[in-house]
Image (cartoon, rainbow, N blue to C red; front, top):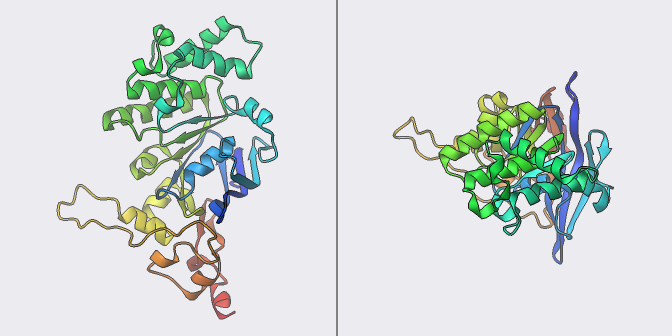
Amino acid sequence: MSAGKDVVCRMENFRVYYMTFDGPVKAVDGVSMEVYKEETVGLVGESGCGKSTLGSALLKILPRTARMEGRVYLEGEDLIPKSEKEMQKLRGAKISMIFQDPMTSLNPIMKVKDHFIETIKTHKPEVSEDQALEMASKALAEVGISESRLNDYPFQFSGGMRQRMMIALSIVLRPTLVIADEPTTSLDVIVQAQILQLMKEIQSHIRSSMILITHDLGVVAEMAHRIGVMYAGHLVELAPRDTIYYKPLHPYTQALLESVPNTDINDMELSYIDGYPPSLLNIGEGCRFVDRCPKTMKVCRDRTPPDVEIKEDHMVKCWLYADNVGEVERS
């Protein structure tokens, strides 16, 4: 924990396993990290690395086959043992989510105002319908939508406007933590830029913290204060944005950044990471990047690498930086 920073969310050895007939799928496996007040943490990694599962798990909106272990504290409250009824009181009020595709997250036969009234009165039953509509109008105005659209249906909005509506729904109760899961994936480039700028302004206005889940390294470069890199269920590196981009340590982080094409270099050869991520079903010991890593050592195949703290604000999960790697290699 960084001195002098207020922690909004803290995960300790957080695990999410999907139980199947063939064994547990270890989608999130031992993640420990903190999110500070008014901070944006970007989570990046290949498809299937566990970042979206982690985001959904914080709200406990997972399939019934999912099992959660470890500790997740939101403003000091441990979310893991909470019941569904208890979580319903927290969702929207203290922790909310902006989903990837707003059209599948909104009810097509409910008017805009009904989405807001339902959300508000679920958490604040004492609020009258008129008061709820006033809160909805204010939230819509904050994202640039006129209150005259309250009587419209979601299908009457464009993709960008639907995403604005989702943002308004997520912040109407002023939550402490917002999870944004690929919030601009379904939008064109110009609308993406508008939505990202809007999210920054809204976050600053309501003074919330954010976990931004994305494949787009350009998006986290624009939005995040710190960046967490996930690979095969592990958090393999976590550091301030500039450190990740200019001084990455984990071989996977380095390879991920090298694979981003540079449009300023005309004859640049496209780089890529050879091979495939491992199956998360009954995965064994050892580093999960071992078969694709150019710096593999014997210990990488035999033992799971530790979380090594390089500096107070820089963690890397790699044997290359472990002080006792020589002793472990000989053992």
